[in-house]
Length: 402
Image 1 (cartoon, helix red, strand yellow):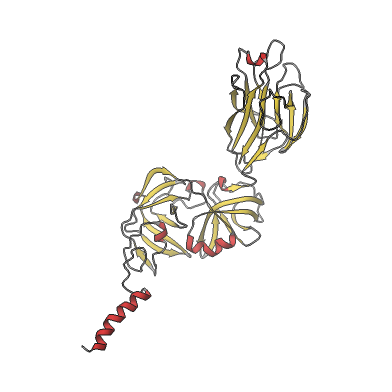
Image 2 (cartoon, rainbow, N blue to C red):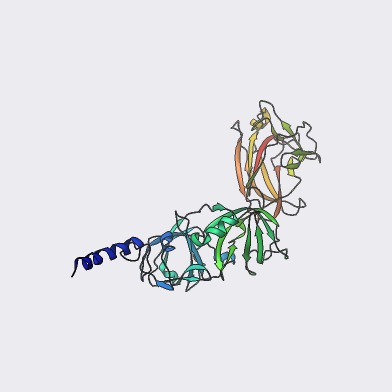
């Protein structure tokens, strides 16, 4: 063999290694059969020509889809990398309903097929028995992005959990079903709502503060899929009423305007003495007198809010001698109305701590749907004294979360 021939045999493999044609020992990439990637991020980087039969894996991931909302086929599962911007579609042989969003699972992909379907990367031919729930949960923070960035990066990210803000939903139908154009004033795309999903009977709000969901290619078109009603935020995430804006020291019923809107104060005053428990300048000192129709002991919203998930109320005792020496419990009840204030039902009753000089806070779950209008009132339900006056309670900082 000539010197030239020997050099050629040495140089050619080196060149091939440099350009990535041969000598690759990285199992995370490579167009060969039976790869066994260690994560969803690495799985998305397996080079797929036609399809690949996957090897044994132990990939930890978190479930981000939710078949129970009806917006995904019952055998479709989407899982996301625990740390990287990567998610993947899985087509199961059986139902995916046993896996709920936020479940941490371990995937053994042995024998499953990795291929592209309709423009997206899918794992198919996988049995649900090859997915093990760890019993742990992780609520992933959705990646905040915009439609333009999503259109550019979805092919790399896969159907990972993202959040779009300040979105207009434009459709001829007034319900959330079918394909609806969504627009953030930078770019636009379509969201897809199945006709039998939890969204089908919901009115289209037209504009929302944010949408959380998964973007996936269907028939080579990138569509945005929401999972359940919690993925839609119509307004702000939280709202605080601090009762600081207006002032009145007459216990008779009146309508007062505070920062969140109009409130009916029936048997209460705004109180700012050194004795009154309060956050900031003042609180509402709520009493109520039995037999007096303009002093019922109620703080009531004169407006509705949509999609309230919880309400927190700060409360304390007015430290007068009668209140501190009261032998009966001092209590108030938080009530909710779903018909514009026509009727109310109790959310819960709280006993005020008469031995504490400050304010304590109690939270009540509400879990209204995103377009469900509700309002609340606080009622002094204490047993009255002999003079028919109820013990005085200080109410402040009503905090709504959506």
